[in-house]
Length: 325
Length: 246
Image 1 (cartoon, rainbow over the protein chains, first blue to last red):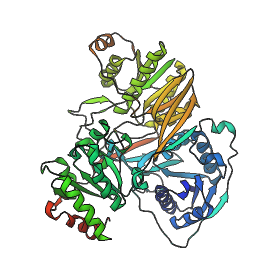
Image 2 (image 1 turned 90 degrees about the vertical axis):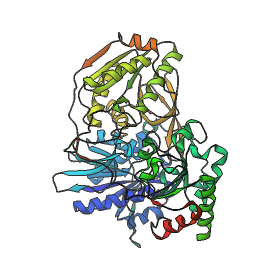
Image 3 (image 1 turned 180 degrees about the vertical axis):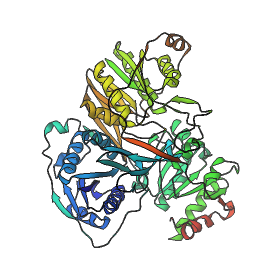
Image 4 (image 1 turned 30 degrees about the vertical axis):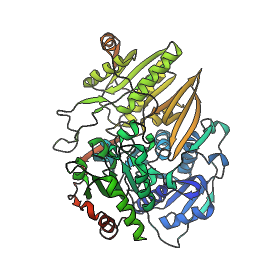
């Protein structure tokens, strides 16, 4: 038996969330007294896959089929299922991403496995029972979920697990083929369109986020948010009312019915902190709130706060970050 | 074309979440339940497509106990033609997916739509499981859905962008904004909804594969540390030296 980790790659690099997934998987393997094997999807280089040894992975399976570069649900599911069979995987760990969770749900049916998504901690197991903690109620609560059966699939929420870095350890990269046919690529995308990202930082993968609400008064003032984000190396985000009136694109909308983020630092500018917005951000490690209204409910959920005018405070913060060097 | 739209019954987004004293169940007392906001995109888009095609049916499906019927009626008032309720507590994603797959198989539906996830359990699982149980493609999460004959063109959200995907019926799609502007019921809809068929069936298939052993609320914050606006730059020093996040 083994633990199988699904590693997503993009442009040759292993995604940060997949480094966390690999670290999670190798720690589960240790708990169960076995080893962790990875199966890589997307565009990867052998050198970067070998480096997964630093996250405790001993072996990486890689199918160099060029059509696997983009996400294809049918083909990815078949590939991972074949790897799971070959490795006799009892636990499969993937990222709780639009790829990982989509494949995970199909795999759970195909492999007759129990599935938990949005998982935030390592499992607790005493040999017979197997329990994981997952986010529920859109960030307003957690649930301990017991997974039944021989096989388990776990989708790990981004930024919940610290990635391991054991310098110098390498994994063996082994070529692998799931004998995919044209039929497995029937739902391949016709076209992939990437957004223009300010500073190139994707919101779901970001460590730091600077977010604006209606208090920014209009889209023309977003430069203040972008300047601070750029100085910090942060992604930009917004509240629901802001995306509803099209000041910002909807993929920046953070909250209960938008994206849930859990960065190390979330800076909210001119956002009052409605319960639906808090649900999307309250697993952030440190929350900073800037609002001119001292009664804004967001201050109750914050670690640091400034009661003041965002138009006055934001340039000062950007300046202070630049001075840090 | 036959559309099947799956809806869940969830606490209103403004709900303050609490649990029963043993922490095993959500405390429903005093809570307003609504149609899961993501499912509203699926429902409205199915109605729009039916209208554009000038024919066909939209069936609403809910797996839930009798207390979900007001929201099923609401979906009928918004414009669905008929409804099915599988009379069971939705124990977990796999249990629900089996009910949907069985009904979809028997009913010969062409397009199966639902929201990308429910805002209470946040599984993002049911659509993939239904697709796999039926052996048909799932597109999740879909931001746009257009139909031309039996071919659907969808935009699927990926981290940092989107994919354009084409699939033929039958297929499953899980929906999210900006697919459409969710409709609200009008007076005529509310009147006609009362007499539209709502069939209640008993669950089939296997039981659940997962079980919640305990719920917990996130730990409370320690209290906010306020920095005067005049010395805003101090905040950056605290973030580096105290919080160690920059």
